[in-house]
Amino acid sequence: MTDPFHNIMRLNLYGFDGTPMHPMFLSNKPPQMLPTQTLNPTPTATATGGAKATGNSRIKRDVTGQQIMGPLNKNVKFYNNDPIDADKWWWIGLGMTAIGGVAYLHS
Image 1 (tube, rainbow, N blue to C red):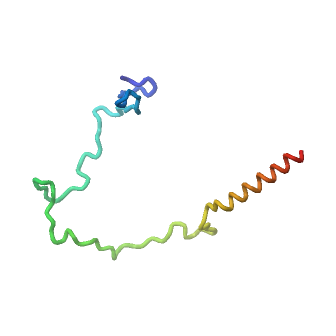
Image 2 (tube, rainbow, N blue to C red):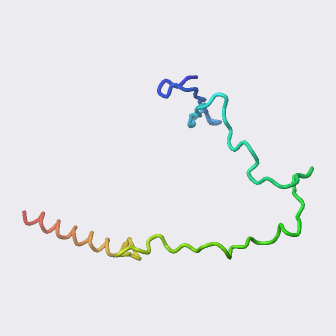
Image 3 (cartoon, rainbow, N blue to C red):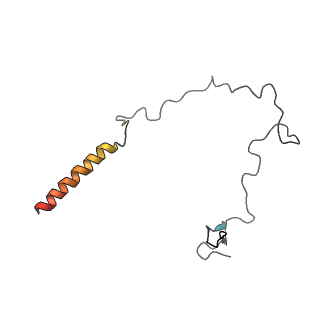
C-alpha cells in the first residue's frame, strides 16, 4: 500500500491480538541492507566459522606512540562541578511558593 502522506510504500503491521503496530516504509528499491560485508572479518574462514588463533593474535596493541588528549573544557573560566543541586532548587521553590502565598493573601 502506498502511504498517502509520504507517497512511498508502507507495510502495515498488526500484533497477535490485532492491535496496530508501527508501520514499516520502503525507502529504496531494491532495498539496501547495510552492512554489505562482514563486520569482523577473519583472516581465514573455517567450516565451523572460527578462525585459527596465531601467536600474535593474542598480543595487546601497542599504544606507546599515541598522544593523550587533555580534557576538552580545559580553557573554561568557570566550571561547575555540580550542575544540578536538587536540595537548593527545592528550597528556592519553597521560598517562592511562600512569597507568592503571602502576596496573594495581602492583595
